[in-house]
Image 1: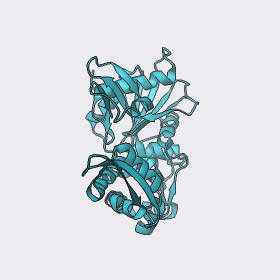
Image 2: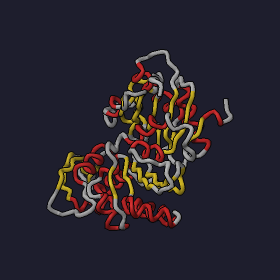
Image 3: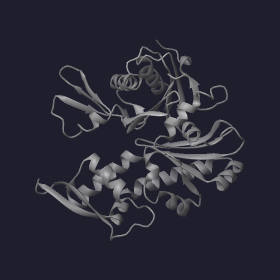
Image 4: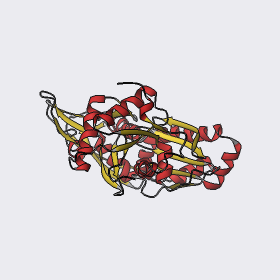
Amino acid sequence: MANTDIGIDLGTSNVVMTMGNKGVVLSEPSVIAYNTRTDRILAVGREAYDMIGRNPDYIAVERPISEGVISDADLTHSMIREFIIKVTGRQLIKPRIVICVPSFITDIESRAVVEAARSAGSRQVYLIQEPVAALLGAGIDITKARGNMIVDIGGGTTDIAIVSMNGVVTSHTVKNAGNSIDRAIIRYMQNKFKLLIGDRTAETVKKELCNLYDPGPDITYTVKGRSLLKGLPAQVQLSETELFQAVEGEVLSIMEAVRQSVEDAPPELVADINENGLLLTGGGALLGGLTQLIKRTLGIDCTIAKDTINCVAKGTAMAFGSMTTLLDGFEQAPIYKYK
């Protein structure tokens, strides 16, 4: 691998980048801030994320990637370019780039990803499906005739795939993931407690209090926000049981997608999965009690990948050495016919 090769996990919530043999060199929120009067980019990543909810009217703070796909091409181009400049130090290089994409992505959406990378100055762009990248990053040997099941719970989507002999045998993608769980918490707080909270507060509550396997009423967390009745600052005590009620529907949708993927797989691969279990990656894998819930609900052993947040990005870096062997989920961008 060349020292300038860049792997990008272009996620809805975070962008993780690897470079050459350095490993992960950047992990920041996929957020960009710009001046609406001058269209000048003010900040990207963590600095832009800290502006959410605190910005004046003439400064827009946007997430240009929604539910795993690019929703604003121009802002995505600018964000990727700024991140590449940040990791390369403004060197005049034209790197090869591997970008992971959801397994359900369309050709039009793929071209938007490719164009975003090319506008940042890359000489070659490759796409790899997230489940394949996640398995590579987790150190799983996917070349053998043996089924490996991956559940990658990101911010915008949950990607589920069964991989064997370098290829994706069956896959499902649902839009129940980290962000939708945050929105469910926000709705619950509004409906039950008449308390308005923001995305960042909901995310913090999810990380601190979530227990999907054995929630109890005695463990609580103080949630602060604005009372919808009085319009003044307020706080309530939220219990593990109440939080489980808030997120139960989203989590069960993910469980159902996993069950559907197993149902669609050939019997021989299901036997492999029964023996190997499934691998959880992504930020959502860290939800408290998730592995136990999957075991109890589906009867499948479950493990969390080491360094689960950066697992997909590490897989994109490893993919540079697998270009001649990978089949499904890995394609060279120049096959697209466009200017």
